Length: 304
Ligand SMILES: Cc1cc2nc3c(=O)[nH]c(=O)nc-3n(C[C@H](O)[C@H](O)[C@H](O)COP(=O)(O)OP(=O)(O)OC[C@H]3O[C@@H](n4cnc5c(N)ncnc54)[C@H](O)[C@@H]3O)c2cc1C
Image (cartoon, rainbow, N blue to C red; front, side, top):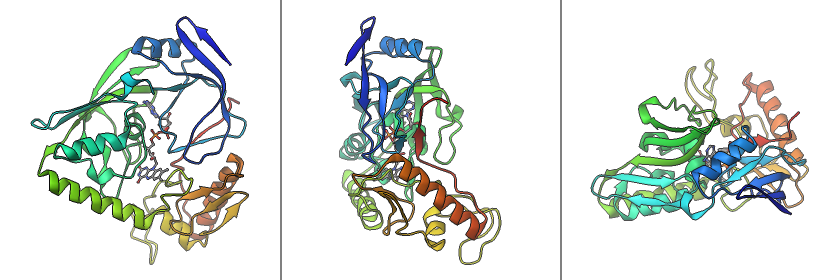
């Protein structure tokens, strides 16, 4: 069913595509075609939720009552590459993989280590997507967005409070991002991309339904023998593995035997299974090491 607010169509009771391939629906979903229509969305629901590629997202089985907004109109997917200056500009709805391959083709270095991270540009920017070969924050020059009052805002990289897996721009809808990349030999950039992809394919269950890493890698509060020294950021997957959780299941959700921080889902899984499995794993790791893991996966639920 669809209704309209002014010129903006609103769809009702819509499935939300996520990489877990399970979860509830959106009571209301809008696909704004312009900044003005995005402002209309904010007038309808100032606490709306932006859906990127759904690669780091779990939607509760009961669905979500907040307005869900998808920036999937062609205008949000624009990409421009300047191979001389290294400046790349992409809309928030652009596919991160296409931006990376576009940059690599132009011989622009910086993003190739992030290959294999499914995302829109908006989602990758907000989550500060990254891994063993770097994070997106180090390539960002400025971020354009609008705040929940509908005001256009531009943030220079130096003013963005980026931390591990967060951009710190709470309440901002990212609309476009400018990157500053480094001109390099295209063959060398491509070779690095291939190496990084091979590493990901070898270490992660790439074909399974998951949202990548469920938990953030924690900083150790104290020395833990055979794990790491106080103050170092260590792999949450290592702690989950050492706590004996590999292969652990709740309903249709399983801790991947391949990479313990990836939780995979079968087609009969419920979001509740993933949530319960995350809680079980958190408690087992806390019992084993005294560390409470912090979720990386974003969970959308109904308002209380
Ligand atoms: C197989 C697999 C491998 C992965 N590997 C990695 C990895 O190596 N490193 C890593 O960091 N992540 C990884 N992830 C997780 C995921 O790819 C990243 O977190 C990615 O940045 C999510 O982007 P998205 O567009 O899918 O965002 P979504 O999952 O759709 O949304 C995530 C959050 O970002 C917000 N958001 C999205 N777009 C906007 C916007 N325009 N403005 C404001 N807020 C917005 C959403 O509201 C939500 O809070 C992996 C996931 C999978 C499935």
